[in-house]
Length: 146
Length: 141
Image 1 (cartoon, rainbow over the protein chains, first blue to last red):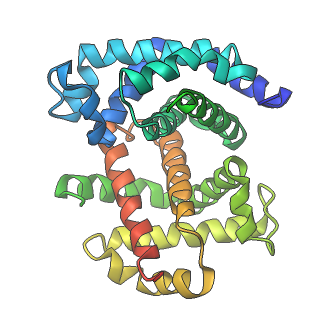
Image 2: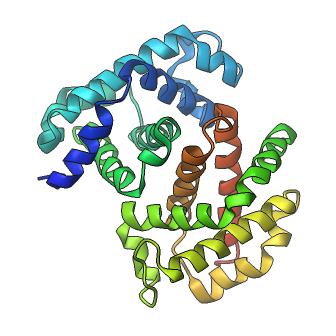
Image 3: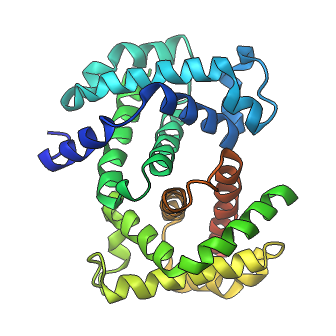
């Protein structure tokens, strides 16, 4: 399997406590703040002129919620991420034209947000399991690129 | 480049971080070795088990160097010149690993200082650690 039984336990244990909608908005917002070039995909989102504007932007929150719910669904198919994200991979390549490097960036921002929320509970072993997950999701989303 | 407002964030957060600097440095290394086991190849001579004396000593060194960079935030290259030479000629750590350690430092700071780790602080630290990484690899060739 992609994760050991122990890693699955750590991931699911933490993920069960995550407010997916909120964390999604937080993660996408921080991506746009910390790596402002990623705003290139979101010209239609309105005011992205400051960290405060971005973090409170309704379109950012809505899109972040969408993205993270999709990620969350993917977690249910952790042993076949490529299958789970095949259609989304095609979409991101053919329609959205997103450089897969952005998936890696967002994955690491998500890890930072989880650390921020969960503090010491997000210990090195939990982080290591999540790094595997975000890397797997990023690879799955890049898999159908051509 | 780091702007003045970001320098202010880093200096003020460092005040808090410095009271636990050794623990922060050590935990960042623990996270690095757990998430990116290939980084252990640079430490075949160390006991890398969590809590080991080697880890604590090395974590303290990493934290001290970051403290030096913070204290000379307007001249990080000057402050880390010797360390830069050491990485270039002796340690020769592949440059990709600086991103990995920087990420683990960010995660450690985020988990320890939730009130302070705003989106702006996240940006400031990410930029600062990028600059430190650049300085440490700029003499490589």
